[in-house]
Structures are given as structure tokens and as C-alpha cells.
Image (cartoon, rainbow, N blue to C red):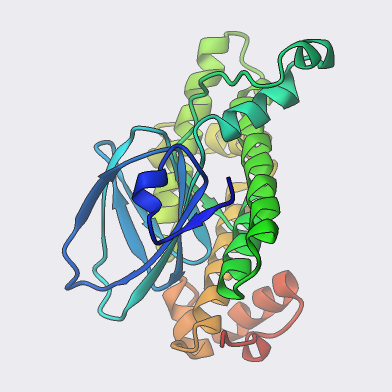
Length: 291
């Protein structure tokens, strides 16, 4: 079945791949849902997805994965209109993609249809990741009114990227040096918690001590484990994410260079512009505004 877009989507949940878009602002009543495995994204503004465990504030430079059956409420505090872009996967699609990546070819030849449950880690993911790039390509194709066949190919490509990301996420702890598996799992859990806290407030004046506190770890132990687990130092991660957020703000046309600089935590436009050019290959003043 080809992807279902907006009209009649609720009836297709779980039986087909569904794409939903919508608009809202701070005056829009909060809405609660529960559905299939899904990716929640934003094309304009920001939206809060609240689960019983936590809040995910999603900007256009991130998306969040929510597990099948997870209950959530979405709302926003933004005054301007915000646009959502959400993908609801057909039941078993991503799980089957994972199985095809980890099960031997001999077994797959005997049984091509079986999918097994998989506990996905619910977290904000930058669109600068491979799965984020696939998510963005699908959103662009929908905006350009691409054919159902093209959308189907892009959606299956997205499922494959999500599967690869989920496998990589489950294996992050393997690089840590702790002898006990339970210790590695706990360290990884704390690192992810600290990263999530940083994502919630990228503009804060983060110190290594603050990051360690968020992870309930000694600062240098945190820094060493973070670098091993995520292949990036905590400071490099924070700088990259600030500059990725700044690019989204500039592309929205609602922010000047100075406003974007201050919004993501820089105090000097000069240092902001230098770092921005180093990451994005162009000065912030040359960033193309969305149509």
C-alpha cells in the first residue's frame, strides 16, 4: 500500500505508512494521541511532545522517535504558526528492516516476513544525521507533491536509516571500557540523559562541570566516556548543535545574524560568524532563506 497523506490517515494507522502535516500555535488546544512507531518533526517554529516520561521540544533541526503505543500530547508555546511533519510507520516495517540487518542471510531466505519487537530509544535526533537527512528528503518530496511511488521509495529508505540508527544506538555502550555490561549500560544511559538536557537548552552557558552534573558523573570521567560513546567531545557536540540550530533560525527569515547568534548562546557575532563559516562553509549572512 502506498503512503497515506493526511486525509483518512487515522484509519490507516498501523496498516500503512502514514504522513501527517498540520499547523498550530499557542492558542491551539493541546491534543493527545497514541499510535504506531512514529517520527515527529517540525518544519516551522517548535512543538513540544509530552510523554509520561518527559518533554521533547522539537525544532526544524531535530526530530523525535516515539515507540508504538506511546501516549503523548503535543502543544506549543510559540506565538507564530508552527508546522508539524510526522511519519507513522506501518507495523513491523522498521523492525523487519532491523532484522534484515542483524539476522544471517540463510535465516532470511527461509523466513522473509517475520519482524520482532524492538525497544527504540526515544530521543531528539538532529537532522544532520543520516536518518535525519532521509527524514528531510521525505518532507521536501511531500512539499513538492512528488508521486506516491517516489514517496514510497523515500519512506522505505527512511525506515532503513532509522533501523541502522537504532542498531548503532543499541551498540554505543560496547566501546566503553567498563568490565561489567551493567556498568556500561548505566554510563550510556547517563550520557544520553546529559545530551538530552543539553538539547533542551543549547544556549545555556554550559561548563564541563554542568554537563557532568546532568549525567551524575565526575566531569573528566563524563568527558572521556562521552567522547568514546559519541565519537565527539562534549564541547564539539555543543558547538555543532548550536550552529545547526542557528542555520535553521536564519533560514526561517525571522532572525537576523545578531539575533541568531544570541539565540544559540554566542555573545560575540565575530566568533559566531567564524565558527559558522567553519561548519557550514559560508558566512551566516549568506545562508539561504526558505521560500
